[in-house]
Image (cartoon, rainbow, N blue to C red):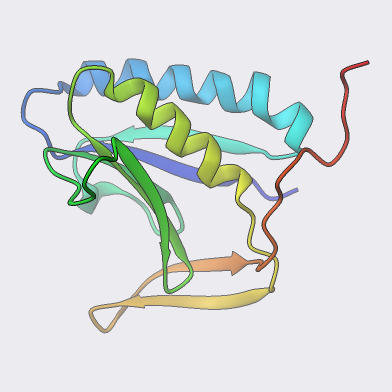
Amino acid sequence: MLARQTALVSENMTITFSELGRVSAALQRQAVRDLGPIWEVQATVDAFEKLEDVPLGYWPIIVMDEINTPGAAGVHEDKDGQPFALVQARPGWSLTASHECLEMLVTLRESLSSGPHRSRGKAVSNFWSRSVTRVRPPRSRIR
């Protein structure tokens, strides 16, 4: 199973890289311990200081001052086959980042579109996408 790689990045000046690292570690633990066994998803969650530092193929979770989505603390989207999430920088942002990260990892795309994703004329990542959204775990381990 191919691991999905996510990147936690802050564009907010009050969130320190140390805080970002602690939240990233907690999200990583949550993805491996809680999400993976039930949803059959493998993922990494890594913190990066700048969006420009995020390697190709990672799905960014960007914490920012304004996400331009009225009434929402966070959103996850897919632009040209490249999943990403936006999280409003405000008290409790780490809970929103957790929600968006896990939801983004579970929302699988299954159309087997593979190739370079292009942004502003440049190849920025390779992706596999599938067009089916899972709405419940593939098998329940709770009895």
